Image (cartoon, rainbow, N blue to C red):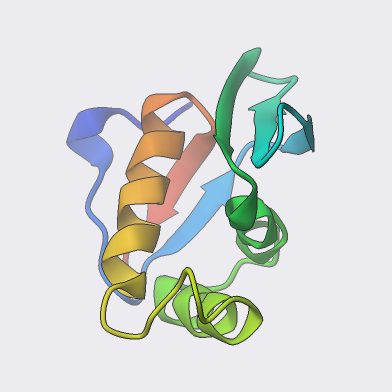
Amino acid sequence: MQVTDRDIRLKNTSVVKTFPLNWQPAREGKIFVGSNVTKSYIIIDSYWLPIIDLLLQGLNLDEIVHNLSEIDPHNFHNENASSKVKIMIIELAQNKLIEKIITK
């Protein structure tokens, strides 16, 4: 089962479960991210690469945001990092890469 637009309810305590994800370099500054399970792939900015490992660790959104802001403070400022991550989760869900969202 994959997440639909109706299922997307993100809180800072939400845990996002992805389908198995893989990635590879695309053109400069971009990466392909996709899943062999859903046969869906998207191209995103390469600064998002750390989110793949963080999502696979089963962290909640607050923990993902915290880790991303430590890894790359330039792209993930504390004041906008949470919104940026939520938008990326929605993008991944709309592209069939999110299996479920667990909201606690």
